[in-house]
Length: 257
Image (cartoon, rainbow, N blue to C red; front, side, top):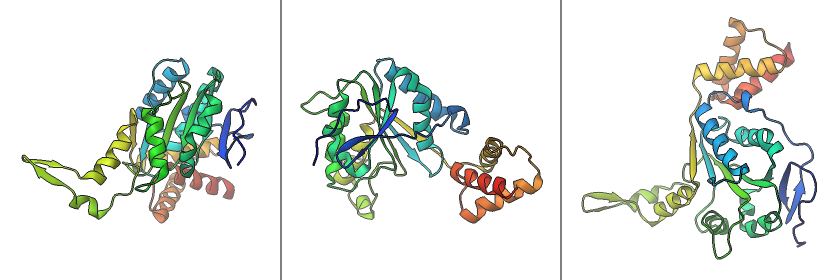
């Protein structure tokens, strides 16, 4: 396998692919103002990132919760917001986390600030990526790079599958309930992230607000009772009122018009 190359280009984002940092030419632009219904999470993540790009202490970040609620979009919006201040993004597949030492090596001496973005992260027990991530979060023998921050999104609260056997490991000790080793390992991984933000499923009003936003962005600002009913039927057919579903309805509706 070839050695990783140093990101000497002017790209705003890279992906780790086949042992190399590959520049992403067409970076998706996501304005923060277009992310609705997650103001608390947005404010906390923006504050943490502002500290990071200002070379002040900041925490690794874990975003967990319902599908389609803006976790990934919020990470992309950070790049849009802070790129002028030197922020860059490195997209790392979850299965490639065992390569973390090779990924961060060419970034260590760079002037830019890098977010290592791991989307839809979940690991199994005894996965090599688990050990690599724990080392990256806590630091091993080698000092972790000061200009690299890990941001992971996951639909799993503790990043690892929750099995029925985990419940059988709980024990009562002096009238207190204590988890077993498997559960402790799951919890200890998620607790290594200093900033942990949870995203809840959207209610009907939030969903409709997102539909109206996406319609306006597509140049279709008209809103009436028929459009609202169509948007609700669309969500009902998909059993979800997520931001992703709102965008999909808006594209379908605007295209038909």
